[in-house]
Amino acid sequence: MTASADSTGTGTDTDTGTDSRTGTDTGTGTDTGTVGTDAAAPGPDPAAAALVAAWPHAYRQGVAGHPVLLMLHGTGGTEHDLLGLADALDPQATVLSPRGRVTEIGMNRWFRRLAEGVFDLDDVELRSDELADFVTAARAHYELGGLNLVAVGFSNGANVALATALRHPSTVPHVIAFSGMHPLPGRVADTDLNATSVLLLNGESDPMAPLASVDALAAELEARGAAVQQVRRTGGHGVTEADVYAAQGWLAR
Image (tube, rainbow, N blue to C red; front, side, top):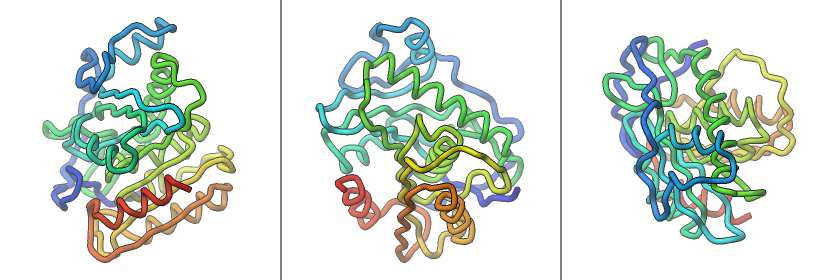
């Protein structure tokens, strides 16, 4: 049940791995950070609208025929951090970018850590379930219909994307994980991943996302039917131009 710490920002090795047992849920505020359209505009489902309004996020309507990019920031980030990355991947995509609702010494995260390098696996499961509920509500609220959804996460955001795909593959069927790793080591799930596809982008010398964990994740995904592509590069934690280029190619398949 040990997992390496995941880092802050979008390209630096600055995670301190501090014990986060005092982390708190900050998701009770109203919807903020809208991009391009009013994220608080009423949708057809009042219950979905209420859930969406209670979770701070950025939203931008895209062009028909392009996917929904679910952008999930790293530790210390906000709903705005990965909007530039979304534009680089597909400037015509619909963008849904929520904020992590756990805090660690004032930094936004997606789930708690028990100590340096140790994830709170129960919280990983809880928070991934909550994220799946938010995605389902947002799909109804923004009337996204059958648009294809791809979760794009960095570090802690990659890990929650992977956990949600493992537990809720019909809600998050596709993942691009920048500097992610196995979010639920040792936890057994029986979901069918035959319709799941995952791109794992990792540095060969990343102490925050050890390759042994990444390989274990890839093996589990493939054993359960997922299509997995791994791309390795020199260097450590972060998002490089080479990573973005590989993700663009993967999306264009």
